[in-house]
Image 1: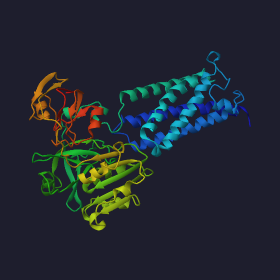
Image 2: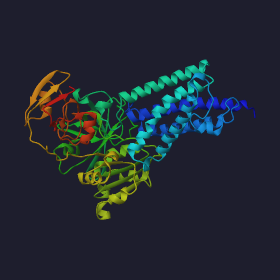
Image 3: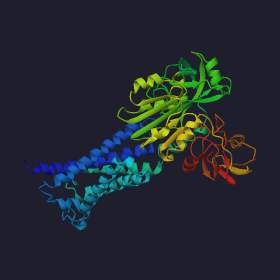
Length: 507
């Protein structure tokens, strides 16, 4: 074999590993910030990120191995494994530092890769701390490549290096400017204030109505002109503006890839206040209706393993999540209900996902499911949608950082202190006013020119989301945890108030 072949392998593998490392970090940033939503797919991003990371590690290992046989490098095994052991230098004034940086980066890459493979067995914060080292690696590798490489004078190498450094810089800026993960609400991630704009009502036509289970109506909405609809991601809901003046939110349960229609499934609730009752009794194929959305506060976060728990009509958002996941993703579903006859899409799900779907009908099993047995040994993300007892049972069993849920109705919450008047400042409109103890913050905002839209009025749908610039809100809604709201700086004024004397809002 021509000994020069190892010199070519050394140089080529180093450049390929650098390219793959930059792509891996860039994809990881897209994964963590989700700045391309709703046009991306978290499962696809996660798969590609892992695949490219593994490939970068493989080419790095090839680069290290080929150095042993490169006739121009003269490396021994200790030189490749011990920092500052090698005497090789391309720039005399820098001494052993360039090669030492490469050795250190090699170990950091191993640490990142190993902890990612052991993610289920490690504390989440520890894994995340080690994973942040990938940013250090991708920056330091640039210096290692420039200070040790023999191709730095070649114009092709310089162009590639400049592109990689620029891409790394842009990716890091994106990570700094968009620091929040997929759990972040839309106002922060997308830099917009959806509740302070018009509701963007769309007139849609009912193309089909069918009954997937007892007392459940599935409705397909299309645009009258047959045009494609806005893209949406699993967990999204739309708001139906009913002719009787009510607004009701329903999760989209169709295929997210199908942009020809929106599908919702509506339970005829015995506790209906006029919404589901009207839909079941008055709505017909061919009717038109005003719809706003989609909106999403129940997004599917990237994970290597999922456990989905649906109670009754809570299957609707979870069904869309299942349809968006790649076949190789590990997941299982517990679908619970009073009886099979009352459970929508149950046969369809069992047929589509054999071995992954467990159906628990209370009338057959004699009682509720055994959640302790279900959760035993499970370390992935848990998604649940269903009645309050089911949610509370899982909240008591699953760590908050791994549990994601959506409620049907508001939780009964009361303030831990007497209501008092407080001052509100609208930063954009430069308006100040006082909210009285018995006055709704939402009403006060709209009475003073805020034009903040709302839908449920109960702190469930999240439509009236507004950003808090200063002050401390008193959260009384049921949209997300209070910690999450405080972390990203939002509140829902339809039911919430201010704990501080002055509250400044981004309106």
